[in-house]
Image 1: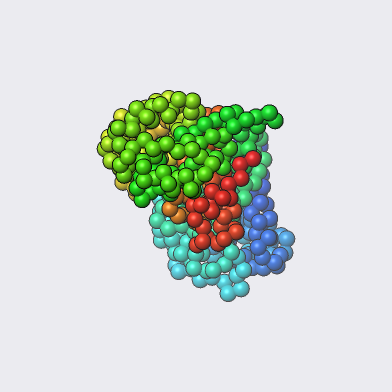
Image 2: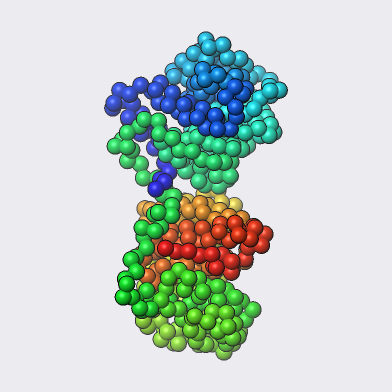
Length: 494
């Protein structure tokens, strides 16, 4: 299990640990530096010249200690400093002075940065997770020089320029090959755009005892976590054991959305799937989703208001609902599906149903998972897409609170919020950026709800398995060739 921590919680916990135990803070810095050097040694030969770019605070102190250790094991170090060693305080100052005594080449940055010609790698120790403003002056020049170098870059704790709490880039940020962070991952490692700057993330223990760590943070779902959520499948099970899903989806020209959703619900383990659809959708459903049953509830191009009584009938005996893929955005459709959305049957609301909800309001019932992408989320929250992307966790939490639901905000990092709980999903790949991929996710979550998973667990497990399926499809076919049907075909939930 990976659980992130905010920079503020990390600072408070570290301070409490040092004060409460008397553990030397200098030793924590030494452990951090040892971890950086271990990763550096995987990238370049032991005698290589490495450039260490060090700020004036504790992050810079980690970098100075790493430079000393690199020299002590036979490597060569060139060091750029933002401050003169005499100006650096506490442990950072001590490590800068030790480094100076060891004979390292120290350069305090006053003007344009010029890389050593024989440099093999760079260690970025300019700023840590406490950064609150954009790099400027010689620090900004250093960030640009690092990024233009083309060399392997190891960032200490977090790439300089990334906000450790939000993942936002403050001005410009280092693009690391590897980031070595300490004790726990920080929020900014997992949230975009910081995640894109982080490279391979290595989480290292630096000696803080687990008993001192009570910070909640965000859980990053792993496959073992998702597997533990799945119910046991009894030996004497029958199709009724694993629940019956009702899919309300599709319209003329959008039958594929209903098919993908229905098939994904079956692939995720639901025992039975029934589809309620408009007349034009029926032939496609019956030929493309043969393991599901289908019922025409409207004779027109879309599901209309006249379908409401039939939908109410079809709801009997169903353990879960999937509402929205390909429905269209007719007001008549909203009149038909609103009672289902406001009921308490476990459900997933997606796509056109979300847009209709944003347009018409009315709320949702208990046991609901909403799965908006940023555009749909912006409409639901009444803000811009840019605002959603700048604060995805906060908006997901707010919408979840307002509706009393579980909100799954889709993205390269998916945010899942319900009550006080926040989880992140970092599975998936660029091949999944294709039409219909969200319809598959809707079906997967509905299938898991039908098997008895509560909304938060169904959303977390569904997002993880959906992302892993996308990764498998991309590995088999290449990113450009992946379709939503390929993602569904590669679903493995076990």
